[in-house]
Image (cartoon, rainbow over all chains, first blue to last red):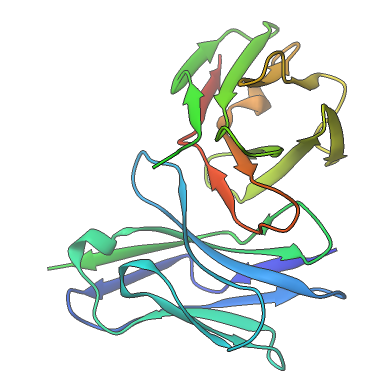
Length: 113
Length: 114
C-alpha cells in the first residue's frame, strides 16, 4: 500500500514570490507520481507527472517538480507565482502496475497581491 | 479538448433515498473510476471499472454502492440508501488504456444528504 503526505495544509505567499509545496510518499513498490490542481468550483487538472528518466519534470503554468528517490519526495515549485495560481494542489501516487491513485491531503496555495 | 463531464453538479437528497451520479468519460478511454472527497479530507479512491466489470474497489465501496456502464457513453455510480456520511464531492475519472498513465477528472458532483 502507498501513502502520501503533504506537509503544509496552507501556504500563503505574495505575488511574484517563489513557492514550494512539499510532498512525501511511502511505497514498497515502484510508483508514478503526479501533481493535480483544483481551482475553485472546478475538477482536478493534471499539472505534471513523473514516470521515469529525468528527475526534474516540468508541467503546465510554469510549475516543475523534482523526484528524489532517496528522500521519497516529489516537491512542487514555481519561481514566481501569480494571483491566478491560487488553488488547492494535490500530490498523488500510483503503483506502476496498478490503477488507483492515492492522494495526499492537499495544500491550499493562496497568492496575495 | 475532450473532457470528462459529470451531472448534476450538485444534488441534495434525503437520507435513505437512492441517488445516481452520472459521468460521460472521454470517448476512447477504457478505464473508468470514481473517487470521493469528503469536505476537508483527502480525495479517496472508490472503484475502478474496465471491460464492463469492476477491476478494483476500496473498502469504502460496500454493498450500498454500485457502478454501471449502461451504454457506450455513460458511467454511473448508484448509492442505494444514502447516509449523512455519504455527503461529499464525487469525482469521475477516465484513462485511455493500460499504458497511458494519466487520468482525466470531471468537475465533480457535490452530493448533500440531509
